Length: 64
Image (cartoon, rainbow, N blue to C red; front, side):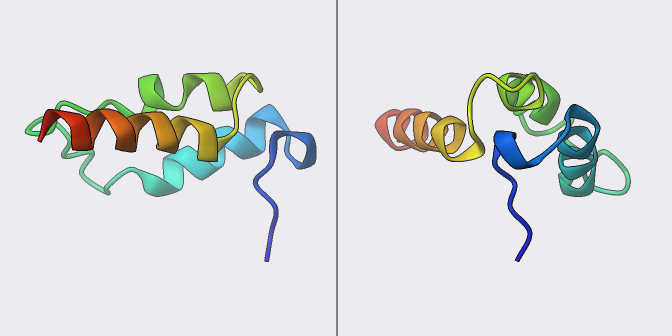
């Protein structure tokens, strides 16, 4: 399994990973989530995916 940790990836690889997660039609208009904005810190090498997801999940469950 490939590592997606910042130390094991380049910025270009992190961008490619986020692109893989985007729907083909980029149909996130109905959703308020902008994956580029959400994962900006990961792309820039500042926070790991797991950290970003933990914050998102905590906010999501608190709002419900």
